[in-house]
Image (cartoon, rainbow, N blue to C red; front, side):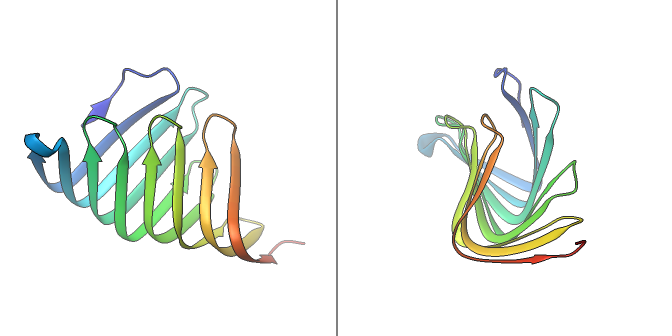
Length: 132
């Protein structure tokens, strides 16, 4: 599934298996892969064991061994991640680990605002600087 009607973010959903439930306005996915491309060209990849897509709100939820990577080598791991279409945010309330070439951060809760280019870990934050 590809969504191209928005100037801020274009995204694609691929999966090994998908089901569409028209009455519930929902599609479910097994071994889901989501690619988000911002208007500036930044690319985020989300993968997980299963996912859901709300065809009305265009929100996406990925669950089970979720990994989010960006093209600038940031990596996030959590049990579940949501992409909120209207707000252009990637979010979770679950524990999350973030790492890149210079830092490893753990915490509970994550918000990435694609519009504002801001990232926030919400609580219980612990960081290790790798390349000091």
